[in-house]
Image (cartoon, rainbow, N blue to C red):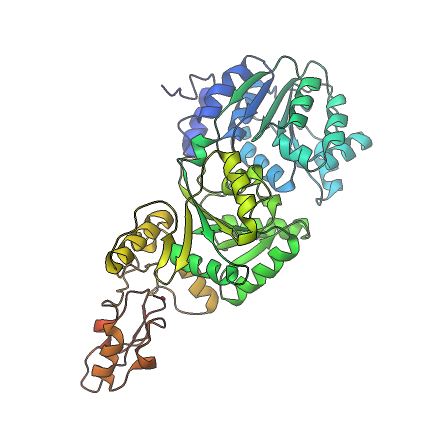
Length: 505
């Protein structure tokens, strides 16, 4: 039976604040880790990102802070600036309840401003290793009264080469501190660090498959290097993501892909290490506010970022290993929500895909893009005849991507139209099902008869009756509406006598 936060020993004021934030029930990592932390034990917590690790250490830390003394009593180390900003934001939502003051210290920020803040009472510091060492050398931070040290995303911290810095910092903290180490994976280096600096830690492990299998629809799509960009654009059009993260292997590739997406009229931006801190914060703010639909990122964005509303992750370049795969797809399907993770696989990527599948202990369903949309190329379930096969594939695509026939992700298509300078409300988010969309726009119906409708009403076939353009015949002199026989598509109404569709068959 799931415990409540109060039964875990969290004070009433914090529980009420959590409820106001829409958080009512502890996640498994919170349920298992918080009692150990409350009892004063060191903890090694292993759980995938998106399982609620942040609250698992924030809540007990706030319980222990003595706000009547000005010293730093809690320290949270993170590998990236973005994660430091995110944790600080979560802390500040709760710290005011107990009267605790929080400071974020990371590179790219005005160090003098941080120094001025440190002259006052600061109870909790959230920091990246490099900037924290800078403060320690300056003597602007002192850990003589430190009660609790948290290493968040410890595996990534060591992967990024921060082991000497982390060791240096830990050696400048009191021996009688409580140490909490949280990580999505537990490589040998992390275990060696725990053995050297922790006192008989309790281990809490939440199985990866608990999230990977149940919350995220995972798909591997067969592509070629030449078709990859076109396939991505087609999938964005078909799947109608509300917010999507597209992962690339390098900074240069992410920048080039973002430029190409913007040229297609999509509301996208890039996130990688070559950007200034101000630019990175600006991009993340726009993405959180859904002013961007697509974030093109390198793996620096794969760790710990919790963006509400990410419905899709696209692995444009296949991840280096299973560990990176888990962290990438963990940007969606967070906190009990569902999501879709699509990995592009070329002929050269098959070995890497097999290694990922061994690492996550499952085989990803294989699909390809056909003239009818997504087509399963492994497993069963394809209908025998052509007509029923089209219906089956459309239904599969709708279920996997929450197609716009439900109206759930209509905002994505609307933002794209706005970006192009078009009038968006009529377009809405209807998918390829030919139903009436949530925005009230009626799709054209009837498949092949659209071109014929053009001949009957307008006297000539629009574009020769081509199906892929979705254009229907013009309104004839007798006033009949040629759109009566249009194809299934995401048509939008233009002038009173015209209807157009934008989908491809």
